[in-house]
Length: 347
Ligand code: NAD
Image 1 (tube, helix red, strand yellow):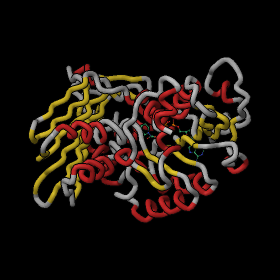
Image 2 (cartoon, rainbow, N blue to C red):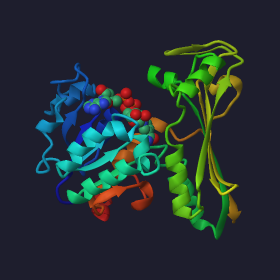
Image 3 (tube, rainbow, N blue to C red):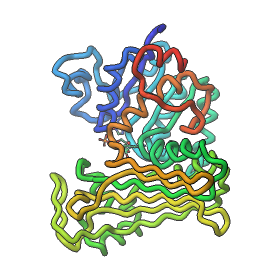
């Protein structure tokens, strides 16, 4: 193998720090810089921020403009926000400097759906600077889109697709509890959905658009529903207490229609401690066509670990890609980066 791919890790929260730790294990990748806006990280060695017990000789900065040089950085892994609009100023700096980017921002999985003008701007900026940018993660980016699309590869035809991801929110912190409405009353939940403070899952329009486009299902309308999951038992995590009759999570459904016909239904009920009400977790995909395909993964693919892996495993594909804005359906299949041959096969 030639030189390792030089990476800047931007965002050192739960996901970004996991991505950094994973990259340190990979011989074909080399972390050369780290960025985070947190004042308590600024000026510290990355090894200290990651809790490695040793220094790596990389100082975390909150001023990316001082280090964004394509002579020293090949790619940025960006793990800061969910929203394309919020990401724009940072993306402009990265792509404008002629550096590739992998982001886990949910809307970036297929930004054309909700932000067509921004998607065009990102694509043009990437092409002008000869680099590529990809949005990925466990979901959107894998379970409820790419995995479904891949399974249809063995079908003669597909009439419709139904898939669900049932998971446990207990490992997550206060931000997720709030955005899912956990611990509120059903009335407060409905008010939160109405004013946009309770969003449930971010990514259904992106996943539905990718599936429809890959298969040619002709989705022309997407509907979303968010319902409270009301607990009948007491549930408690380090960050939230849920009394019986209160909300334990959000059952979020996204439906894609072609005319009046439902062709894609994605269901994502997310709640804390579903086991307390005998609810198993898992990923389930049902493809109705010829032949029918039914897949069940129990328990569900671990979201945090999978998001970190997808972002890291896609790095060589993004470096090798033609310039522009890419989605998971535009690049070769993801695979775990194990031996050195994995890099040379991709680049
Ligand atoms: P987090 O809150 O733990 O960490 C975010 C980090 O980014 C923080 O350390 C914060 O200081 C830093 N940050 C934010 N804006 C910044 C900026 N402009 N410049 C520098 N630093 C900045 O969040 P997380 O759990 O690591 O997740 C990150 C994002 O990824 C979230 O929006 C989350 O929803 C998304 N996500 C997507 C998927 C997927 O499947 N696509 C999966 C998991 C998480």
